[in-house]
Length: 241
Image (cartoon, rainbow, N blue to C red; front, side, top):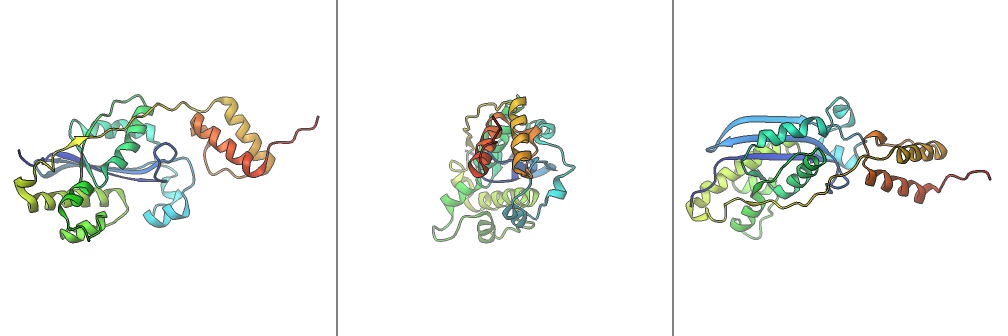
């Protein structure tokens, strides 16, 4: 068995950790054929909501940088095509795949992939006492990790980490380094109903709330959760009888 050496390295920056409720804000993908980079692609993505202070601090990305960016529906097809039939590679690749799979399903695209997870490989080959974060693993294998917590910087670091790790373990590690299926069950989300959007606008006006999300881009479940949150915090609209 030979060590896999062709793949698409990917990394995302997102508004949070849950692909059902959070959004992609940056995508980077690197096509690697026989160990050599043959193409790269990166894009900001407009999440149609304000970023939290924690995400702005972690990534250095601000709302102004995303204001004119395309939404995920305009770019997900390009990244599905870019990945071709290659396995996806990343550090905790299941995280990135789950967001991409949700976006693909929501836009009627097939996206079934195998994955190469450098986090899993590091857990298999690195000393137990050393942290297995991307930064720590890169330091252990003497891989440069520039522009951390940005999509392209982390995608390149994951690619270089895999190359260094594969060189260190050699053919003896080929079985562990084999790609495995990425499993993520996703149900397509439906856009918010007209009445749901009307209710949200009425609540915002009544309670004088400045919403930090664009109502037009909400799904039915997102609109329902936001409505419940506003009512729980501010109360229902009191109408004169």
